[in-house]
Image 1 (tube, rainbow, N blue to C red):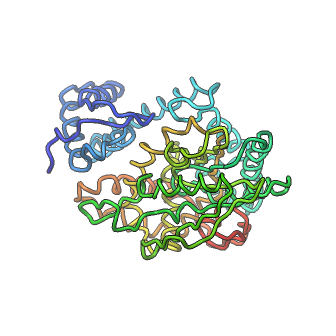
Image 2: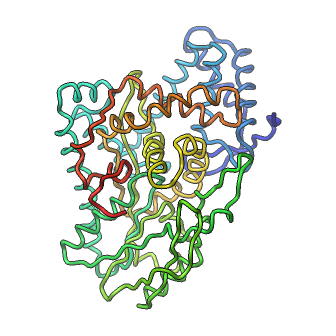
Length: 448
């Protein structure tokens, strides 16, 4: 086991690194013991040490835990050591703090890299449509009202995409590139298509550029002790070639983009001829579209940046809201299995790379976006459960005794608890071919 001294830094919610302090963990646990009427400083100190040991077995300086990661481990350690009441109060306290942050920031679009105002709008929409909890969705399924919810949700999402297109049209004289960015499996590609449809309807010609083809060969990426490749960082992409091609396209030149095969993990250079005609907009969707070095060869005034995230406000039976990253994890587990030759368990164990990169290279740049789109679909979870729950169930006990897989263990159990009481839906025929969900489950009328 690594020394607890290995934990030196943590990642704050705004993506910055700060010094790790065990005393803060101890204080949080002590407050939970005090809240249940049994203050116990010695227990809090002992549990803080165990939390630190668990963190040290999983993280190091290169993979510093986030505040969210540490809170997850605190809950896990308290439960594992039979401090059930303390754990429950800690969970409640944690949720109340999150809600307090949201309440203070409703008037702001982005604070601490979280679009609180947008979140409030999502929560209000979900409650207006009675689809903000497991119990609500189960009632909708029992009453055979799912098709109506699907239609309403897709109208809302499409309206947001079209509103972004309208804002682009307002600046059309200067815009050359539209960038759609966001974390993994947030629905960037479908959103790019829908924005492009609205622009095309207004007479603006658009052309999409597939940045995924600019990945380096997989063997060039770093590997961890499990042999897992880290291809989630911006540096996994050939940023120099991307910027060279963008500059050439802005000058009216023809470039030849690479071709990347996700099943083999290899790229071929100079494959696809690509040109921007006069007056034509370039559309790019990429995890790292807001990352400064992704498009530094093009001046900011010529770019319109859209940030997309699953800003869902959906709660489980215990009232705990589903995490956006967990929603996206389920989408990616399906997508990777169908299109990228990866099994769901591989996606689950790789997810720590995804979250680390998001915290460092995606979320801190949200303030650079010109608009934000919510891609969470309240109706998607019953369909996702039907396809994935057996894999989630199988992973529950698989990593019990492997401290290196603590992140996968905690995440699998959390998703299992949320999905278990939710009714699954096998028949996806009510989901239209143009739905964003089709990007992940297949059967889309769009070409990806």
